[in-house]
Image 1 (spheres, rainbow, N blue to C red):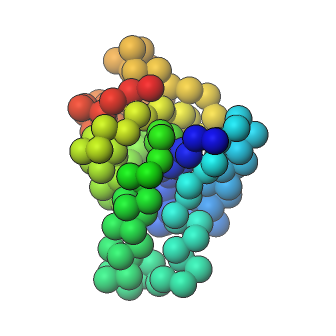
Image 2: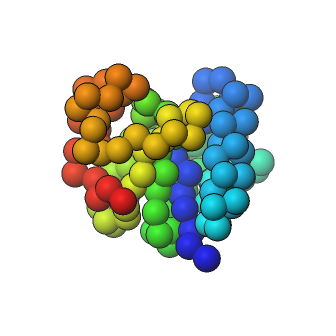
Image 3: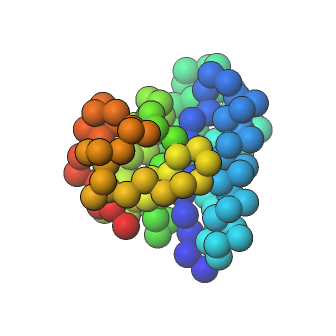
Length: 131
């Protein structure tokens, strides 16, 4: 089975963001992928409010990303942690798919006319290898 890295927000509304990550993990599993969702695992033993532990969790997640076949970006904005993960996907040429929070795909060829995303989001994805 192929592994898909779920790139979604964690900080802020942790309860909502955790539900969102779980929803995408379930969807990925039902589509035949092994979902890799570090921000559902690492906060179990690392404190996201401690800057050193947060950085450790994000960098360990980026290490897991290297073994994944694809990344799914969830939502229409990138948190700092997500930006770091996207840069790692670029560096390691890991293909990316984008989805809105309702699991509707956002296609790269229509991003310039897609009202779900803004110019900052599109610019942050400049240089990614789209699937």
